[in-house]
Image 1: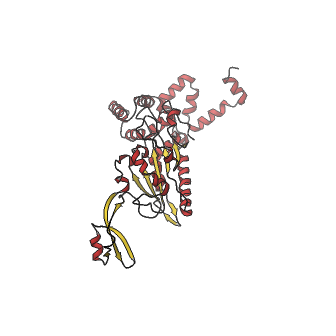
Image 2: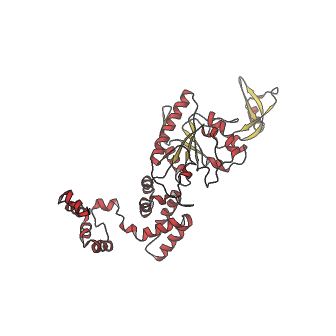
Image 3: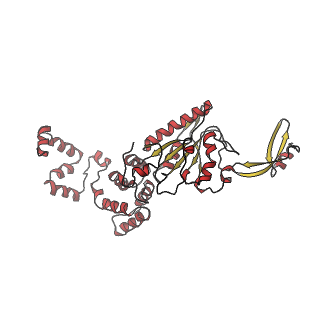
Length: 376
């Protein structure tokens, strides 16, 4: 479990989430478990449970689900190399129940041999041309046409309600039957479809509509907590600026700020950094403008100091493995002035020099080394 917290992530804020707090890797493992459990429940005819992922804005909830969905999966003995089909639904934008149930249509009953069905009066003419006949004794019936976003094809798929608790209460109440039975009045989920929701902490500063206990009891819950090291690995794979990644690893508490700073906004800045020359005055001014456009002032101040000073002291793993002159001449001079050349000579001689220097410190044994450090 991640231990990253800051002053803004108080226990009061976290109390607005539900389920165990998990880092990125733990959430991915739980997603794998949850989907396997849902497959088993579907096979055995047991009730299924949507998964609700809680977390602060911009922490990566949606991205984790998308990455999970893209992984190859096996369903009912068949392999799907492209993974799950994602059906993303911006439920927070809905205002009317028709967005959920679909719009009503006037339908008539038609027959062909032993087959019969209800079809819209707008299209029944085409059926009549193909040998179907109207059942005039059945009259007409109003049937809701399922919305276009509803999954229809059997197979591994995810019905994804992003920012679920930003929907108004009327829409939330309208989904309760869907959570329990996988169906609504006008449509039913196809086999292989699993529901996943995301949401921000409720009862906090966010514009959310609290879910009541009757809704939450129909779901499984987990809360995503940012982990700097795991985020750094992802950011490196995404090609983000290494200086930005080093900043997060040095100041993990800066992953979330008072208002705008989050892993999402940091990602935006670190992508832009690759195109900015920070060695020039113009570049520094542009970086300052870009950073202030998406980050909190406190974050920008700490980041600017880091880039101007601390980043020079960050040793990349590549440089260590190459055994190159890790520190530049300026930093080497600083160490030389502080330690009378001792550490400067060690670092200036490459990795072998580092290892040799450390070995030299212990030539007199651990006891004598500690005696030189401890005042007692």
